[in-house]
Amino acid sequence: MAIYTRESLSQEVKPRWSVITSPLVKPDWYVLGTQEQEIDEAWALYSNTRGSLLSELLLGDMKLRSQVEILKNFGTTSGTATTMERGTLFEAGSSTRTISSATVQTSVKQLLRQNQAMSGTAQGAITPLPKEIVADTGQHLRKGSVLNDGWWWPFKNDAWILGGVHGLKRFHLALATVPDELLWDKASKRPRVLGRELLGLHLAGYKLIGLPAWTIKKTWNAWGKEQSSTTPVSAKTIRESIGFVFAPTSKVTAESLTFTGYQEAINALTGIDDIKNTILNEAEAIAFDAYDFDKVVAPPATL
Image (cartoon, rainbow, N blue to C red; front, side, top):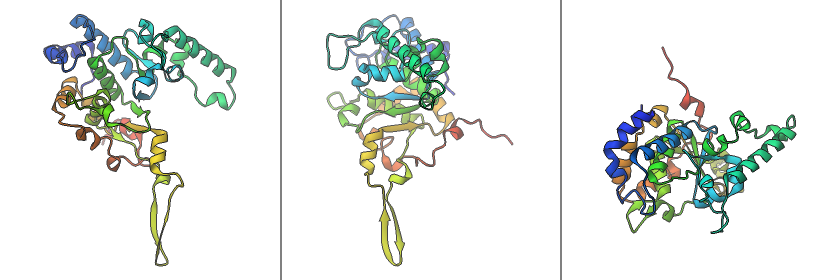
């Protein structure tokens, strides 16, 4: 089991620091803090993600982090500061207007007031915010669903994935399709961030959740004649509408993923097929109607 403390995280990554900070991993534009600062921030991000107040974390492209409605409704996961607090997050489609944490916090407070006004009604009971956010809207910036760390680079991204899988969080890829260019950089022959994330989920034993049974074509033989039935909406259209949900299948496997194992697997990737043929393979998906999260998180039975 690899659930990290601040000390165990430090002990594992320090001997690998030259690899973690190599040009293959650290972007040229990122200015490193001290080793202790970087580890402190990674630990904070890992801890906040593992303890996220929501059961599902959102994957996606850069647009995901610049939509106020998404940030308001799902919150952000961060270590010590978000890009909003640093003033480095721009509104979608703008290179001059930044989104501030105050903007999101105001939106959250408005949402709370709406919920309170609707309390006791059917509508108000549908999506209540966690009580921790009600008590402290600052938690919305630290323990939400969308990765938004003000000091982001791949090491911090790995900390986010590890925190999520060690916390047995489900991951929702909010895209209609997954273009190859989001998974793999042909020029450098390295995975892009999303490819890196999906590999981590695969290593942790996560599986794609299949489509509901009612979307799948059923064929049977009636009076000697083959007949079939299916939903009038295609499976492809449904997948494009709901995105991709990845869920843990084994608590032991998820909690056993380490920084070292994760990073070594990234370095061992030979191409995009190593990602597409595993966790994105619809044929390997878990049947929607058969998946039981409670069984995954339940303690093992004792005789």
